[in-house]
Amino acid sequence: MFDSLSDKLEATFTKLAGQATINEVNIGIAMRDIKRALLGADVNYKVAKKFVEEVREKALGQDVVKSVSPAQMIVKIVSDELTEIMGGENKPLNLNVKKIPAVVMVAGLQGSGKTTFCAKLAKRLKKNGKQPLLVAADVYRPAAVEQLKTLGGQIDVPVFSIEEQNALKAAQEGLESARQNGNDVVIVDTAGRLQVDESMMAEAETLKHELKPEELLFVVDAMIGQEAVNTARVFNERLDFDGVVLTKLDGDARGGSALSIKQVVDKPIKFMSVGEKVDDLDVFYPDRMAQRILGMGDIVSFVEKAQETLDLEKTRKMQSRLMKNEFDLDDFFDQLQQLKKMGSIQGLVEMVPGLNKMIPKQDLDNLDFKPIEAIISSMTKQERATPEIINGSRRQRIASGSGTRVQDVNMLLKQFKEMKKMMSSVTKMTKSGRKILPQNLPLEKLLKR
Image (cartoon, rainbow, N blue to C red; front, side):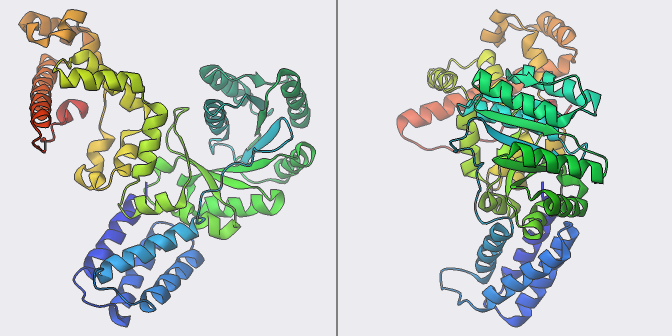
């Protein structure tokens, strides 16, 4: 996400790097480039104009301390302003209320990802100790109810629905069902349309009036650019929603909607959806997103995601086996599974400072763990524990069973051997107190096949 904007901003800062002072001339050139970069990222014109004016004013009004270069100062000011236009600070869901169940109503256009978001939110709330109930109030699109039921089954969260095409009745009866069954949060999936129309808005207004939700969230597809902002404005005028959810943000290289929407409707972005899996939902932190836009990464989110998804017991055992030089292909396979739980590889790479510059985006787009998983899964337990016994006939059998080539099996075994050798060296250096910087040995060719 934000690839285009990040690259252009970096180019602007590079031009400033050789400047000894901040003055009207170099700031004028930098602000012109930044404004073009923002507009190129589909940021609202008024937002871009105001942003540049704020940065210019603050840059010219500050003295550059001796330990900081003009370029570093501008990066800091731009980071602060990006944070500000995206909301300043995270605004969490308002579910700490005495009323049980709390109601979260979800609205938006058809195709924006509302139904999937409802399931993602339910899973997140369940992980945090809540007892959510999903209510299918999108009674007009036949597939919507079934989709919600399927998603609810995947995350083990109950789904309430009725046969009638009556959204209000479905929501009210769902609320009563939650009271009777001890659900403390009700997530209501409402109907969307291909365009904003009066009947849809009137129904949504009725639902809000009757349900009195603690949170009314507007879900919008980030990939539709400025139309996302325009739609948000219309919905907010009618529904006065509490927060925004940006979906498909991982597929938008420009990101203009994320930078514009808060300023236009004055409502916080609360979540961002960065994939199709039910785990691919992140809380939106404006300061962390600003850092990612500027290529600084987001280590805090990376660590939080690791803590949420990784099996700590397995990780400890793996570390112990590494120290004893007992790491085998079963351990490697387990690590792949844990890595996949953390979300898209591209999203993880963006969180690590500098790593997104080291690995070309086209390489990330082509990464695929399936060949490796298939090869390891086609091995016997003995072969995974002692890869040294895998001779020519075994390699042929493994390739045939995994749907890959013998060359792919050979590549995996070779690189695993090199990786294990490297790990052994690191372990010895660590025990002896010496430091070593291991070489990067990615399974790049096989992953990209």
